[in-house]
Amino acid sequence: MGAPRNLTRAMLAFGAMLRASGLPVTTSAVMDAVRALEAVDVMDRAEVYLGLRTVLMSRMEEQPAFDRCFEAFWRFHAEEGEGLDGLVAAVQPVRQEEELDSGAIEAAREKQAQVALDDWDQGEAADDEPLEVPGLSDREALMEQDFSTFPAEQLDEVARLTVQIARRLARRVSRRRKPTRRGGVIDLRRSMRANLMKGEIIELRRRARRRRKVRLVLLCDVSGSMDLYSRFLLQFLYALQNVFRRVETFTFATRLTRVSDLLRGPSYKGALRRLTEVRDWSGGTRIGESIREFNQTWGRLVDRRTIVLLLSDGWDTGEPDVLAEEMLTLKRRAARVVWLNPLLGNPSYEPLTRGMAAALPLVDHFAAAHNLASLRDLAAHLRVR
Image (cartoon, rainbow, N blue to C red; front, side):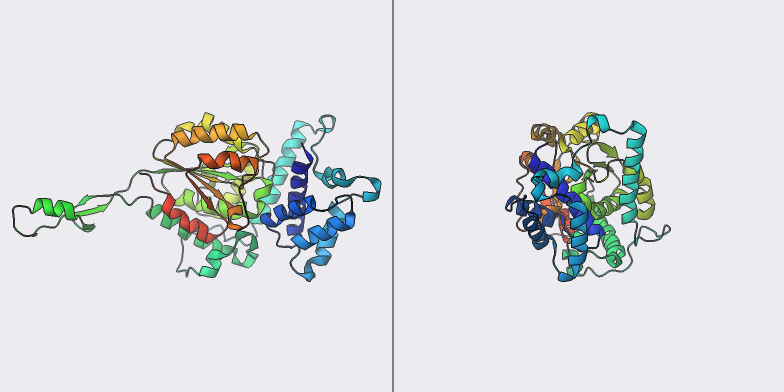
């Protein structure tokens, strides 16, 4: 693994440490920090410190916590010649001779999943809270707020609005209409044809909305680079799973996991407990291999009435050729492939990573997924012709 990729992994881990200490560090800020380190002398500890502090700190009150995290994480000494190698040492893969036995690895993965989901569990509604949305006002400020900046006291309101958005999407999947005797809208063409010999229109024909049987397949990235957004996107997928009749949901990082049954139920808090069965939370990302597994094992779920939603930032450690090949297979089977990328909410973001560049030509619609407004705007793209 080359130094740039190691540096990105190290920065993602450092960002997670800062967030755990209370600093509101977004994924886009972490990517800015990676670029900042490319512009400084990584052999100079002072330059690295100032560069990261400039990008990752927004208020002076955050400096004590930042300094503690910096000292704990970045254990390198320029005078000893460690430089970039020292920067990434904390996240290097374990050597073969140092690998844990399979039982210890499985226990570590389970612990990682439990810690990640326990963090999400703070502030959730009670177990017996029904899947309903009381009277809410869609305040535009809340709808436009980036998911990575929500304080804990707003999470319940975000969850309710997420369910409301999912229900609206379910109602607007199709605008196609069929004839009806009452209600609906006037069908002018059929009304004129029925009254051609009568001299005037005395009988109106109507048509009602036709509900086509559209299936949704949801593929959500839960790797480490998606930590800031996975919580909210999985809330959205949980809501879709419980309001759409035909939906299948999968998570992936280094491997694919079907979570449709785990997400069903009246309580998101209960769903979180069941999601501990997913073993690769906050790990690496192999998007191409995960989609290949989906195509080979679950490809029967996708046909010309299926819309595939893929939620990922596109940071892939696999081979771009594999991702391109599997995306082409998916596109040929599905009615539409929609890629939602939370980083697209940043005006300066460009899809230049190898994975995103390989996948983008094979996507029918590429959109942001960084706030509630972006999820609401998805309605226009959930239609099958």
